[in-house]
Amino acid sequence: MINIFEVSETNKMIEQENLDVRTITLGISLLDCCDSDLDRLNEKIYEKITRVAKNLVSTGKEIERDFGIPIVNKRISVTPVSIIGASACKTPKDYVSIAKTLDRAGKAVGVNFIGGYSAIVSKGMTSSDELLIRSIPEALAETDVICSSVNVGSTKTGINMDAVKLMGEVIKETAEITKDNDSLGCAKLVVLCNAPDDNPFMAGAFHGVSEPDAVINVGVSGPGVVKYALTKVRGKDFGELCETIKKTAFKITRVGQLVALEASKRMGIPFGIIDLSLAPTPAVGDSVAEILEEIGLERAGAPGTTAALALLNDQVKKGGVMASSYVGGLSGAFIPVSEDQGMIDAVCDGALNIEKLEAMTCVCSVGLDMIAIPGDTKASTISGIIADEAAIGMVNQKTTAVRIIPVYGKEVGDNVEFGGLLGHAPVMAVNKFDCEAFVNRGGRIPAPIHSFKN
Image (tube, rainbow, N blue to C red; front, side, top):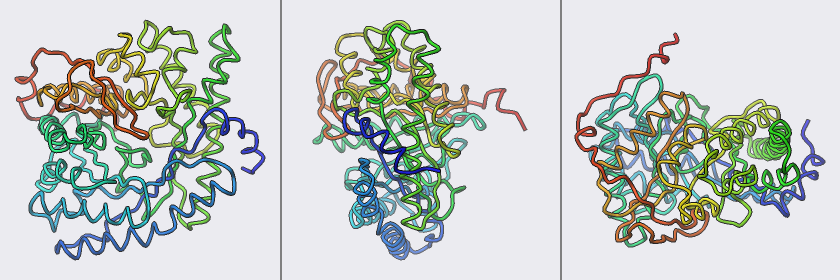
């Protein structure tokens, strides 16, 4: 039912309003690569990725050419590596060898990122999980395209506070080991609660064990399109505002559906989901914060921000689900600070701080994302921030995440340049009061009462 005429309707969105398909992400199961011999395991991983993904980048470019739709990234997600390496890996360095193999395979097929250097430890850590987690700093320092994620909690299981404590330490170590590059390793590391199996967006993407052998997932983004549409309903009531967002989200999602189905057909790989997420970029006019301001706020962070973001997130989802039967992943509005010029301006103007961003994550798609903090921030403070976000996700039955960057040598007010889609960020203040005794208790925060629904 989808044809080129629907895409033609969106030509203006593409040419003038920053509409793009942010990513085609090819999920690949590595379960059949498992081996007790590390060398054989690495050989199998490299062979399968380069075989299954050999046409991914060229297919993406063909679709761009044939339909005139920008496809910014071509990515791969794999089965969480802590599972794949469980038999063969006896030390963190063994896992680093897998990271290097993934990096080499990713470069061979030409993708931007490979996600799935991951562990799912929401209820407890196996020895394999812990080895992988402890290997993350070195793995991210010695590779270029690897992204890592760790799921530390869920609504059904509660929050693994041992993993939360460890991740605070791992983030600090990753920042230190990549300090010569403004602690950039932390930009490729995310800590999640309620992580979905089919997320196409980095750094949290992995190929869940419930997924098929290979699958095409597509992430679409168009903050600039939504903002432009809202300029036509200034001063109108909330009913008209919501209808405009829904209709715009519908059109954006249809573009993603077309790309996903085309990629699936051309590669002979099943289509999985469309993730319609308003994921901003540093480009002017491609900002979620500017949408909030178009809704009526002087600056993102002003009173009313959380309500405006809740409205935006809900209407985006409602429009998306009408356009595709398979909307999944995260789908909604992202609020990464460094990747959104409007958010950066709000921080610099004093309208936005970490506490307000935490409140906003109760109603948006992810969580505290791409936030630079002083390099001398304690590991326990980072763990406390992770615990707070995980609690929001656990209680509200939603995905939340923390991608935070303690930048060595930087203080509050300094600016950090990450480059490309990662943008730049002002270093934000964190609460100076201590939470170490809380973090050090160990064990697990139990699941909330509403998790018992069987």
